[in-house]
Image (cartoon, rainbow, N blue to C red; front, side, top):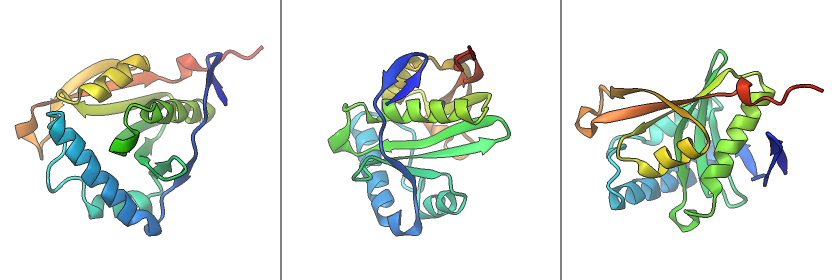
Length: 171
């Protein structure tokens, strides 16, 4: 268990993805795209994300697998004291089990311990599950934009969490 603001959070297994994981990650992407299509989420298309994106994430050591069966993954990109959560996916058979919530908690916990100032998430206005999750995790909406490569999908909403404000004060 980890402790975030005196709340006990069950830990979840995580590890950096390797080239040996590419096929499993591509399977997660296909499953995530199917989930999005079923739920009317217009965030990804046939060309994105793809194998080249996965390989780049692995090369940059930013793609993390979660769960003992690697049934979820997320890309975490750091720029200075900011952290960006990208392409969070949970296998459809595990949806609703709290995995995405624990993944966000893990990213926040690691952000606190690494002196990250803020964590950001960008999601499409149709991605209500992600919008609800980040709001539940006390991320604030800070803006909207149209993605240049996906203008047909409409607004993307940017959320931010000030991680240092959640850091427990030393006693």
